[in-house]
Image: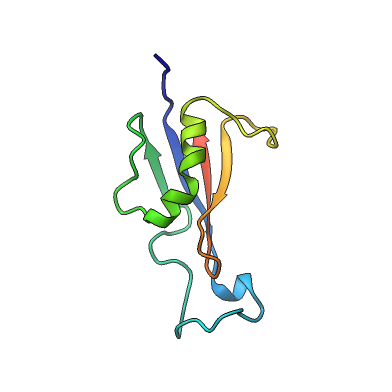
Amino acid sequence: MVKLHKVKITVLKRFNPSEVFKKSPVTPVEHLTACELFRDGQEFIIDENLKMPEDFCPFAWHAIFRNVILLAYGGNLPWYLERGIAINCCTDGLRPVVFKLERI
C-alpha cells in the first residue's frame, strides 16, 4: 500500500483586477477586488483523505487538485529544482489567487 503524504497549501498572493490588466477585457461589476474567500498567507493542511478543506473555493480546488494528488503520492514537478513543491493558480482570470503546495 502506498503511503500518502500531507500537503500544505499556502495562499501566496491574491490579485486585484488592476494588477492583472491595465484595461480589463470585460466590464466587471463595480468595485471588483481581490478574491474575498482567501487571505494572503492563509494555510490549509490536506491529510491522507485528500478532501477539499472546509471553506475552500471549489473552483480553486479543482484547479490545484491534480498537483495536490501528485505531491501526496510522492511525485515531483520535473521543471522545479525543489522537490515536493508546486505553484498553482485558480482559474479566475480577472482576480487570480496563487497557491504554493508543499509535501510535508
